[in-house]
Length: 329
Image (cartoon, rainbow, N blue to C red; front, side, top):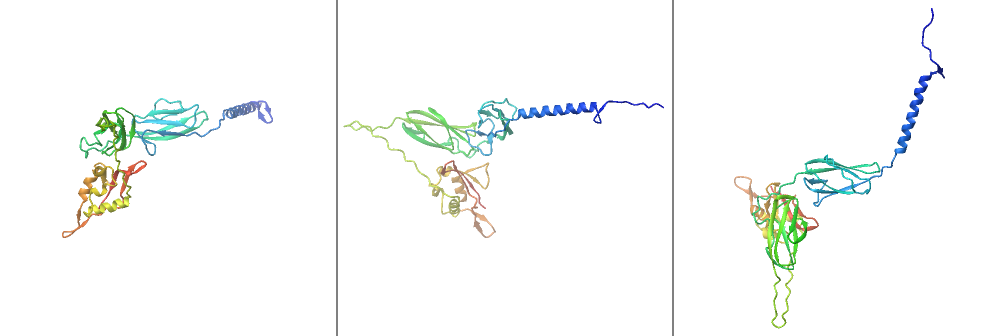
């Protein structure tokens, strides 16, 4: 019987078609390797910073706040803010987040490097103003003379204060500010809390011409004496606790703290963790003065001030206490 089958030409023991496939595969691999070698770029690390007018911690910011992004690289910059908004292409740019959440900011440049940072955007906290008498939100003079500077402070507890004054350029931050009044006229001092227009308060200041005393003989003008600015002392939390114990025992009153509290009895206090209903320091002293706590039917004992006293101060001004956290049992 005749044998039947398919015969192909072989070279070195392999079919020529197999050899052809192997050669094509090798050529394609070499071409891909050459492309990768030609496209290789050194990845130089790049960094960037995120800032705003208000100081924040851990890249946490408010909705609607203007943020400034600055890169250490200067050329071929691309910013992706992670909120599906258009990209930006400069070394220094600004951006506003309009929604709450956590966003990943990506910075890319020609070095083929990507740098990432997370931004946390929160809703602004409404300032607690229920314990403040209307019209007393801004403490300070309502009358002065031209050439003087006057200091004002806000009696409301807030996370951010932004001050302006008519006729004076720029804004100031912090619970306590000073404005100069170079000429006579009517000025309006305004403070906005937590960037919220609904928490905006004003105070009108009437500035008079400098008082002059004329000498009948020489007709000279006597300069006004410089205003006396009281300096406040720094008190440690440990010493503050001792003073408060004397308040409890009835030995001390709010007046004994006049050398330490520039806001005096209006200094806000968070008592026993009640952050939503801060009290004025004068109210706290009045409540605790001579207070006793029932322990049995026939006797009582004085309450005890806990050790975890926290005194919040203005940045770089340790003698200006802006908030007190106090606990007792």
